[in-house]
Image 1 (cartoon, rainbow, N blue to C red):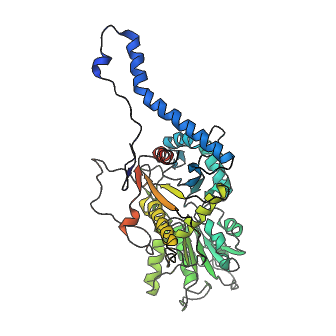
Image 2: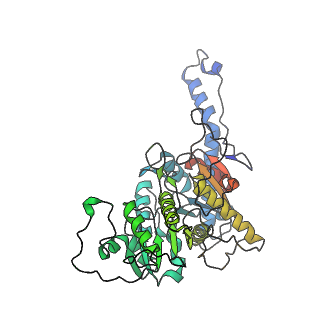
Image 3: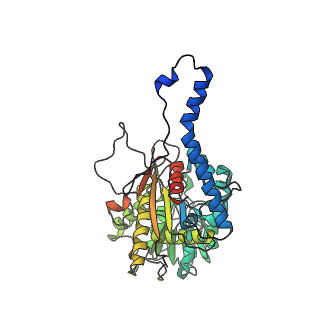
Length: 441
């Protein structure tokens, strides 16, 4: 199905049709069948040959360092719901990469994989994607939800409590954090704190436990395995100013909290979306407000749809484009409240940069972002492309479109329906790649 845009309608190459009379003409035998096949496929063949020739020309221009239209576009690809579902490759993804790569396996456009996953290192994610998609993907092409933490150096010398699953302590150290404490380590240091699971309740210690060093900040990488344990210990730390062995006494100034991955929902192999880290954050915020009467405040919100993540991803695109700026970015995703919202927010940010205005402030942009403005080339823009293979599904007779848009984004994100409206809606990632090819080759 052709991509539908609020600005234009992208039309697929025409397909010649053959009348029923020519198919049933008596006495023509095999020759008629051959003619029919040729007539039906000739326009598609011509289109494919033109696209292949344009692709070869674009690759030649890039190899010789010549400026061309192909160098002006870049692609940000989401993973879950776009390329994969539950660890399985979506068939359209294989077809898309056959069109997106040249004969030597190189990308025709600068391409970066931007995912809100955060339970592994970029090297591991690049290896996983390369093996699943049969494509050479480097760690420099992978942006995870926590990647922009590398830029927040003011927190790297603080003692931080990290929450999530996977090797989050190692990930934190690789980002520059020097004093890292995991929730599991905190449980060992304070065995009386985690009491929900009766089978894991520890015996009372025989002697008084020494007080551990004060926690100075909290980093939330993603949803944990044992929600009740992490909720309990995070509240213990927040309500004691980083000294969980003491009784609750909320401080006048809350400890800094950095949160990655705001996805309320994400798409796996189940028929309906699964709960994501955004739901865990909602539980933490509700519990904190119930106990203190105050809102939980964040120093930074990272991952999509945060601006800092798109700024970080654009730098990755520039590096993969031999340090030449990409002027049109196509952000392809399956979640209106994450991928579309973030791309449109970044497009608005770029437009303000063109007008020499300051970028949006507040937690939707990340209060702990670096203060410098991002240089923007004259035509820089970000187009949101929504696919129907994940969280979003194209409306049908059995599942009609809702009469109103329900914005279930994070509490600190502006509830603005226009930001959840995609530039283009396409069936799958193959159609999204076709859209970019038509516009830039």
